Image (tube, rainbow, N blue to C red; front, side, top):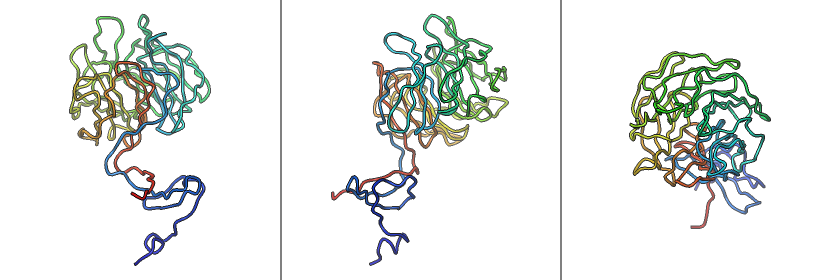
Length: 331
């Protein structure tokens, strides 16, 4: 019978900590935990619990990836609009320097060390405020041209971002305005095909983004639009119309939608976008709305939200094909 070394070309190592970048099929013995472990690839995406937020909140902004994320602003039951910022290292959240202006229903984009917080409101005042994060502090810079909250946003840093849709004072009709950020100023560009608010974006780039869901007070939408850097194009609808959900993704060809207005079959929904259509996949553990998302379609975070009580929970998404460390047991 062939040995593991003959099959894999290496022996089972005894190590004091798990390897930082294991490959599929690699097996090792962790002498600290006294367990045998191996690296597998997930066959179906799934959600798992992550570290709790220090400040529970809903309708916050976010930036970054699932092992290096930032959450900022949002609302609680009192005081309502928050300015707290927290940083995630893949297992726990740490409080860092606050936003200059507390607000909720704001947009966020970028990475953990170079993020942008866009617009928002505090229930009585709507903001066009833009703040940029340099890894340590927030700095107020030039405002959006159109004051609003509930925007969908995308971008790779605090010098390149996109803001679309949203709304301001009643009547609560959604906007179709789209603006791009060059690190200094916002510029109005081509509008969305469907004006809307309270919808999700893919955390894509300024030239390749996706927005989906939302509402026009009412109705709620399943509509998805793809941005190519110049124009919005309507593409395949979500399977379930939703508002107040969250999203993640790297561009307009790969995205994830999760949570939303908690009515039957929607608040737990997770849907995966492959560039042309949405597929329903593994649900969130609990129906939730006004949650905040960041990351990619393969590895994402769902943070906070309402159930309807304000939540501190973080849920981590690992998509199909992603690496996963498993522990072997006798059973």
